[in-house]
Image (cartoon, helix red, strand yellow):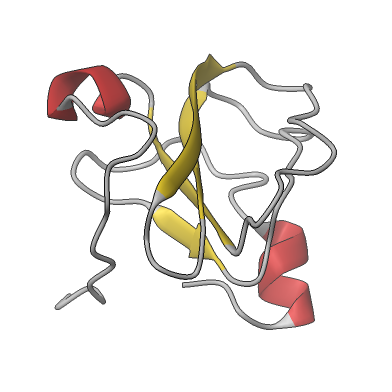
Length: 101
């Protein structure tokens, strides 16, 4: 969970990968970029109620996401392929659980 100014700004930059079955929740956030990232990611844009507003698959490094997602509260960055494997789509409700590790 990235909530501070610095955590939100850094995100996944400079990491070499993101472990399967993990993700980064950025709160608050309604738009992202993938500058200084080394791998593609799946991205969910979610409202306060946990409803998926937008789902972007395999966002490549050095790209901008949408500049604004209306009613967006959280962005969830996931390993590439997670959206398809989970069958997540716009309108679904997601539950954000903190890591136990």
